[in-house]
Each structure stands twice: as structure tokens, then as C-alpha cells.
Amino acid sequence: MVSNPENLSEKGKARLDKALEANQPLATVYYFKEKLRQLWSQGTKAQAKIWLDDWCEQANESDLMLLKNFTKTLRKHEVGILNYYDEKMTSGKVEGVNNRLKTIVKMAYGYRDWEFFELKVKASHEARSSFS
Image (cartoon, rainbow, N blue to C red):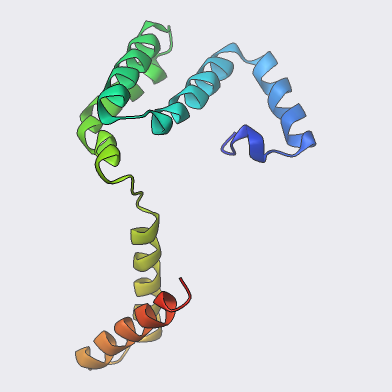
């Protein structure tokens, strides 16, 4: 399940419960996934580091190679993940700007005037900023 449990309909919750009962490895991974969401609610970067270390240790103690491999990936990106606590900012706004730029590029296909493209980007940003 990609959805968070609080966003599931009653039918979705029933399907999830049935799937978790039928498949123990899936249930294990799902519960680890849900627990990992708690990383973002730790009070400080230091607490988050301790919490993440504990989560990775527990995941490595499971018999699932998938989780063990995932902890290696988390460890590779640990500095970036924990940097969230320096600014408490996600990549959502950056992704939104990137998508807006892609749309402008598609609409401007064939234009040869770079200055016009820059003006379109700036105008798009100013229009969005006034509604924020």
C-alpha cells in the first residue's frame, strides 16, 4: 500500500488488513514503513539520528534482505535525510517549480528567444506568489 493508513477508505483498510494477514513478509515491511514515518516527528536532529540508528538496527535484525538493503540506502543518504532538521523543509516546493518550468518549456517549444522564456518563467513565479 502506498497510501498512509489514515488516508484509506474503509474498503481500503479491509483490503490492507487482509493482505497483511496473508503475507507475513509484507506485514513486516509495512510495519517498518509505518514506523519510519515517525522519523519526521523527532524533536531534534540528534534525537532523529538516534531514532534512525535504532530503526536501522531493528530492520537489520529482521530476516528480510529487502529491509537490510534498504537500511544500506538510508545510511548512504543519512546526512541529507537528517538535514531536514536544520531547515524543516521538504522538496515539495522545488518539485512544484520544476514541474512549472517543464510545462513552460513544453509550451515554448520552437521559440528561439531566451529572454522571452525568462520572462515567462518570472511571470509564472510572480503569478503563483501572489496567491500564496
